[in-house]
Amino acid sequence: MEVREYDLPGVKTYDLKLIPDERGFFSEALRRDWKEFLGGDEIVQANVSFSYPGIIRAWHRHLRGQVDYFLVLQGAMKICAYDDREDSPDTRGKLVEVISSSHKPQVVRIPGTYWHGTKAVSSEPSLLVYFTTRLYDYQNPDEERRPWNDCAIIDPKTGEPFDWNRPPHK
Image 1: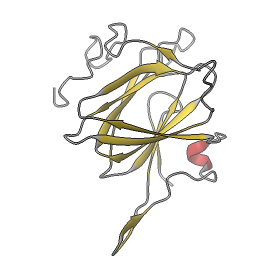
Image 2: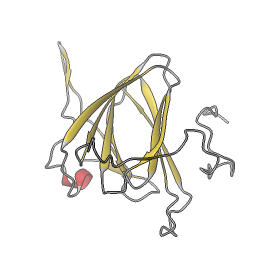
Image 3: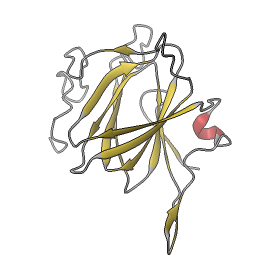
């Protein structure tokens, strides 16, 4: 198993193994025995999100320990995580961007304590299935939100407010 770790602790990706045959392909999406990737996490809910091209779904976080696992099934998405916690001197102000695509399936792990969000970056709609380690509580949701274009989220590459629409080649 090849797990890639990023600058924010707990943000990881795992490339899925596709097993092709004359009908198409098969792949395992998540297994509880993938300890190197999941650690002690236990998946308790699966959700599906469909986004038209260019749609941004950001920013939010979960403060009660939820971890999200994103798997893009169709199209491509930019998946971002940002740490602005006062008690994170080593990672405060860090931002991670992962481009995930149906052409190279991978699972992206995002600890919920980081602000996170997605943007559909393909010319076709994106279909995302995501798994969570906590059930959604309808009466008391574990979700804190801020605007997708919040100027307080700084892109460490530019020193400017993060721009979801910045061309990738600049």
